[in-house]
Image (cartoon, rainbow, N blue to C red; front, side, top):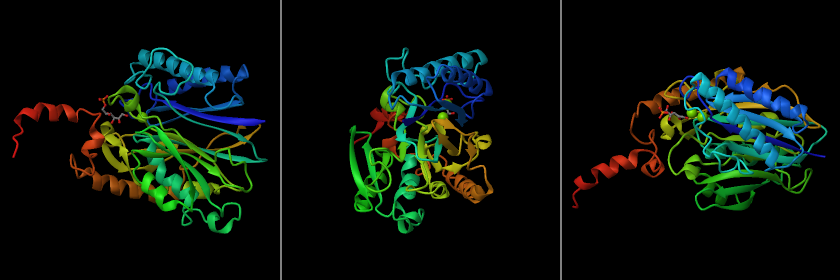
Length: 368
Ligand code: F6R
Ligand code: MG
Ligand code: MG
C-alpha cells in the first residue's frame, strides 16, 4: 500500500489584518476533514496555520492530484471563507481565485505539496509551512539538507546517502523543468536555484540504494499567485513535505537546514526581503512590518497512513539563536526603508503598483 501525504493551504481570511488565522477557521476545517476521515476519503489529517495561511495536512491512498481530495480542500476553504466573511475577517477568500472547482485545485490559488510513497517500517515526516515569502525560499534549506555535507553529515558518513540525491528543478517563468544529479552537477544546479524567484526545487528523489528512486523524499509547493491572477493579489506562501531518517537525512539534519535565517522575498506587501525566522505554531503570527517571514515545522510519525500528534519542532530553545539572529537582521534590513535590497528590485515589483507610478511619470522623463 502506498500512502499519499497532501499539504494544501490557502489564505482565506486573516485575523487581525494579515497576521494570523482565527481559531474558528481552524475549527471549521477540522470538522470538514473529520467528516472526510469518517467517510474513509482520508486516512488522517491535521489542521494548522502559519501566519494568515490555513494549512490542511492530509493522508490518504488516492495518489497526487486526486479530484476528490482537491475538491475536499476547495470545499473546506470555501466553508472557512464563509465563516471568515461572517466574522468580518480580513481578506476573506483572498487566495480562492476561481468561482467554481474544476477538477484540480492547481491554478486556482491554494498552494499544494503532495507526495506518494511506500511507507517504511517507521516513517518520520515533516511538514514545513511558511508565511510572507515565496516558493524559492525553500531552495536554500532543501539544498542544504540534501546536498551540503556541512549540514547533513550523513552525506559523508552514511553509505546510503553518500551517492547524493536527484533534484527536480522548475523554471516557473518558462514553465519547464530539469532533473539534476547532485553532487555531480552541484555547481550548475546552484547557478539555477540561487536565482530563487525563477528556479525552484520542486522535488528531491533518492538515487539507487535503499529506497525507491521514483518516490520523492521532499516536495515543495510552487504556485505563484501573480502568475495565475496577473497581478499582486496576495502571496504564494509555500509549504513543503520532507521525509527523514534511514537512507534520508536525519530529522536533525533536515531541521538544521533552517538554522540560518536566510534572506527571502515576500515580506510586507510582497515587496521586501527579510530573514526567514523558524518558529513554533504559537509564534507563527506575522506582526512586525507584517513579518518577518516565518517557517513552522510539524513532525509526525506515519503508520498505515495514520499520523501521530504533531511535534512542533521549532518550538525549541535550540532555535532561539536563529530567532535572535533573524531579529538582528530584521532591524538591519528595516533601516533601509524603501531602498533596495530591503525593497525588491524593480523587475520583481512588476506585479505591484510600482508600474503605475512609473506610468504616471512617463511623460515627464526627458531623453538625454
Ligand atoms: C499579505 C501581506 C501583507 C499585505 C499588507 C497590505 O500576505 O504580505 O503584507 O500585503 O498588509 O495589505 P492590504 O493591501 O490588504 O491592506
Ligand atoms: Mg493575507
Ligand atoms: Mg500568508
